[in-house]
Length: 341
Ligand code: SAM
Ligand code: DTB
Ligand code: SF4
Image (cartoon, protein in one colour):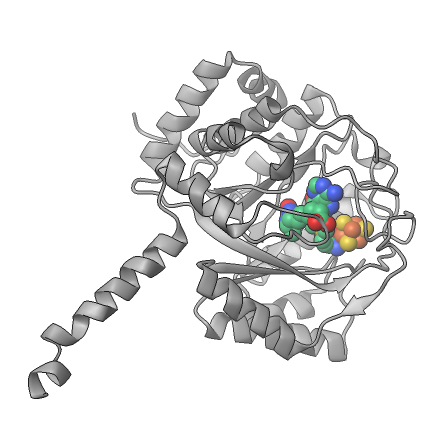
C-alpha cells in the first residue's frame, strides 16, 4: 500500500471511519501506522504545571479557571526557573524525552514570567529533550522569541468541534484558537493540537473536530487525544466517564487521517484498564504522558507505565536510554582512552 497524505477530508468521511466495525477500524489504523512509522517507539512526555490556577478563561472542563469552584481555581502559583529545570532533569532520568510545561493563562504577557519561560525552554533543550509549552494565546513576537529559544512545540488544543465549542468555552472563540495556531506555525514551532472526548459532544462533533485537524496543511505534528477528567467544581463534574472504546476509535481515526503525526494518548488513562490503553497503542497512539501527575490531576505512575509498555511489547524512550547506557559502559573497551590505559 502506498500512503497518500490528504488534507481534504470531509466530516462525513471521518464519521464513517469512526463508525466502522472496531476490528476493521483497528486493522486500517495499524496498516497505516506500520507503513508511516516503521520501527516506531512510544514517546514518553512528562508534564509540569509551572503556573497553576487563576486562569481568566471559562473552559468548562478546567480545574484552573476562576469561573469554576475547583480547589485550584482561585489558587495562583508560579514556579521559578531552577525548580522547573530540576523537575525536567528528574523526568529525563526517568526516561522522558519530551518535557511539557503549562501556564494557566488566557494569553502570554511580556515581562519577567515570559523571560523565565524562555529560560526554561532553553534549559530543557540544553538537556537534550524536546520542549513543549502551553500557555494560551500569544503574539507573533512572543512566538518568534519562543522559536529562538529553541521551543519544539506549542500546545493549543481545539478541545472540541466548532459546533460544540460555545457550550464549553465562551470567553474566547474557536477562530481565536485557530489564529494562535497560525502564529505558532508562522514562527516555525511545531503544533501540538488535539481535543477531548466525553464532554457531551455527538459523534458528528468528534468527526468535525478531527476534520479541522486533518485539513490543516501540514497536519499538526502532535495530536493529543484526551478523555475528560471530570474535575469537582467544574460544570462538567459528575459527567459519566467517557467510554474507553470510543477513545480507541478516536486514536485509530486520528492515525488514519494524520499518518505521520504523533498521536498522544493523553488525559483519562486513570479511568481506563490496561487493556484499553494497549488497544490505544495498537490503534496507533505513539506517545503517553509519563509521570504520576498531568497538570493538576493524576496519571498512572512510572512503574505501572513501564510495565504496561513492556507487556504491550513496545519500545519506549526509557529503553533507548538504557540501551545507550549499556553501550556507554562497553565503549571504553574499544576507545582510544582504554587502549592508552
Ligand atoms: N491555558 C492553556 C490552554 O488552554 O491552551 C493551557 C493548558 S490546558 C490545561 C491544555 C489542554 O489540556 C486543554 O486545552 C484541554 O484540551 C486539556 N485538558 C485540560 N483539562 C482537562 C480535563 N479535565 N480533562 C481532559 N483534558 C483536559
Ligand atoms: C493535552 O492535550 N493534555 C495535557 C497537555 N495537553 C497539556 C493536559 C491534560 C490536563 C488534564 C487535566 C489536569 O491535569 O489538569
Ligand atoms: Fe485556562 Fe487553559 Fe484551563 Fe482554559 S484550559 S481555563 S485557558 S488553563
